[in-house]
Amino acid sequence: MPSKLLSDPCNEKRPKRPYSLLQILLHWLVVILIFEQWYTSRAIPRTHNPLLPPSDADLLQHALHIYAGIVIGIVMALRRMLAYASYRRRPQIRPRLTERLASIVHGGLYFAVFFQAATGFVTTYLWGPARVFHAYLWDVILILASVHIAAAVYHLIRGDGVLRRMIPRFR
Image (tube, rainbow, N blue to C red):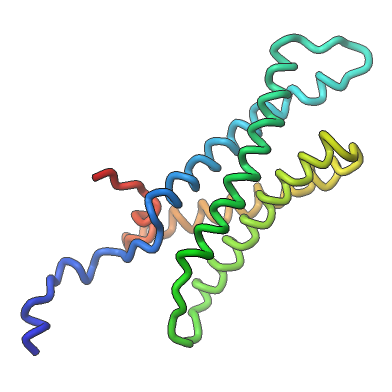
């Protein structure tokens, strides 16, 4: 009973922060780079058009698209390693449906974003026809990211503090 008197009732309502500042910053870096990828992808067909020479701006955007894609692949691998290193075994309890769905969406996003970067690398440097898989994965990312964003809005409206776990706190 004495421990209850010493506990801070405000702490009970604060969300747990299972993510380090580095993990949070890497998450938002990938988000920014994905928007950059979407923007610069429009230049790629123009740089491969056999009828028109590409502009310098198109060539620059194409190069940015390639190198940012490589950075995304590296960051996603680093994020996976950090998640694995910080994994804490939890007691065996059956997760709720929402937790299972969140796990599926997160896993799908990790898979799709990492393999989008990988297929972009393969398309650029090894085998051009891999672009079909690269394009397909973009559609998968859009669907999963939409579900992910909808869930974030749901948690924001609900006010359960889940969204605050991904907002960096600088101390």
